[in-house]
Image (cartoon, one colour):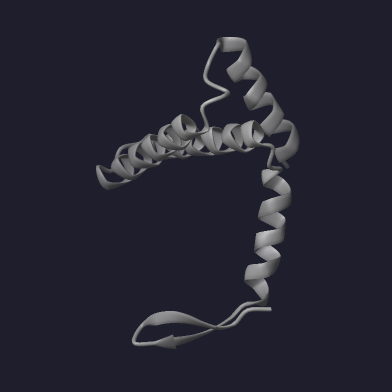
Length: 101
């Protein structure tokens, strides 16, 4: 199993070591958006590199989280637990949240 906290720090350190941006948060959000678009395009075009593109998305996301001081591992666990407690109904083929604990 991957240790997201260590991986997040490793990604950040690689960015520092290679001279990549670690200060302009807006730019990192833009890069992340670009990587997600590349992953979508790879999927839509049935390219064999969708997994690699998704890995880029995860790398940029973890790097951004480290830059802004967010433990993505902790936030993911907290959000999963929150989502598991939510209750939905289906209306016209759409899930509608009716209870949020």
